Amino acid sequence: MEETDLIKNLKEWFNFDRFRAGQKESIETILNGENTLAILPTGTGKSLIYEYCGYVTEGLVLIVSPLLSLMDNQVLQLNQAGEKRAAALNSMLNLEERRLIEKRLDYYKFLFVSPEMLQSKWLVQRLSRLKIALFVVDEAHCISQWGLDFRPDYLYLGKIREELNNPLTLALTATAPQEVIDDILKTLNLDPTDTAVYQSNPNRENIYYDFREIEDNDKDTELLQLINDFPNPGIIYFSSKVKAERICQLLRENTEQAVDTYHADRSIEDRKIIQRQFLNGELDIICATTAFGMGINKKNIRFIIHYHIPNSIEEYLQETGRAGRDGLQSIAVLLYSKSDAVFKFKKMKETQLNDNIITMNDKNESLEPWGLSDSDLAMLQVIKARHLSKEQAKSLINQRLEKRISKFVAMGQLATQNRCKREMMSIYFNQKNDPVQIWCCSFCQSDIQSLVEEMQLISQPKKIQINYEKKWDQVIKELFIL
Image (cartoon, one colour):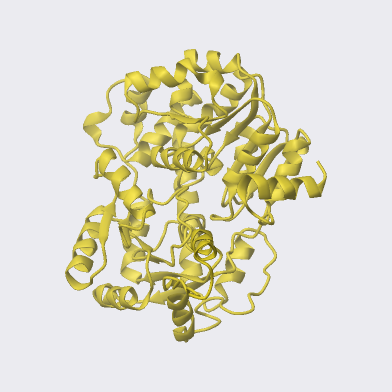
């Protein structure tokens, strides 16, 4: 397709005048019939790639997505844009809703499915009889056992892809070091020599990276000051559900902000409501654990605050990338304390997996009384799926613990070393660092008062100026355009 046609379609279908970095290149490789892995920063419009290709090609676009809230949000956005041939198949549907979608599979243009749903042989057989224009694996880093967002059900996607007659495939993620790239290609059975890999620098130019070392006792005071200074909306990330609830109450008592929490202890219905409220501007701040925000397309998030140090640089960039999707100036603040890091380091080295549990897993005995963490349960699924011996299983468990620790150490170095933070993140992902002309990071610029003023200015509601000398019909036309 000629570039003029690419731009023309972009304007007509999405009302954009130009592609963002990586979009055009990925679309072109897909339209040329090449399997593609696109590693593009959070907030750069990865969903536009498969939506655009879907409208150019004939057949179903099947999107595998890891989070129920993510699918719900993406279907909602397509519906609001006028695309009614979009649906999601996941565990949030009741039996009647699910059966209705399954009966109309040939009607849809975009079908979002959870990896768990693809474990249904009946569903895969039905899908295999359809023309699949594009098989999309969203958040593809969940494939890698070395990643902190690892999802065991992603391990079966290569086999499922074969059962679907190896359709043209697009894998999408925001961050992926080389070992994760290798895992994605291997698991999906994609030939590295015949797969286009497009990787851009995960740094976002319009986000200022602010790292502050602070004692735990002073965090609440610092946080309240930041909330008073920064314009809304924003997200505060926590490692602890209990801490998220406590800080939420603190903000309700000491600020006028509309605040709520989002974490695994909230019901599915609560989480859906909270997400919708945040998207609609009814909530100013979300106190959340890491699950919140993945795929959330709220363009005007001005700040991301990490109350605790993230587990890895990948996780940090995934979460900070949820700010400034409108391209305007935003800020990411990490409140780093040594005691917080020490506690997390100790927890990261812990695992309950031992010979007895590995043996029980192999015999399909109940593991519920052991109260295993999600991470340990995920590793047991890998061990079972690969039919590993006890010795192989223990070796894999130790390798994963070592990898998690090394990723956390890299995050600690990013937080504490006196060096440009953008440069360090670029080196971590083997990317060239392009210096930012204005706002970079807390190492490069410590006084950010003018940055905060800029953020406050762009967040003020626009006033509509009416020229009463104009004819009434012209005034109304301008009002609707605004």
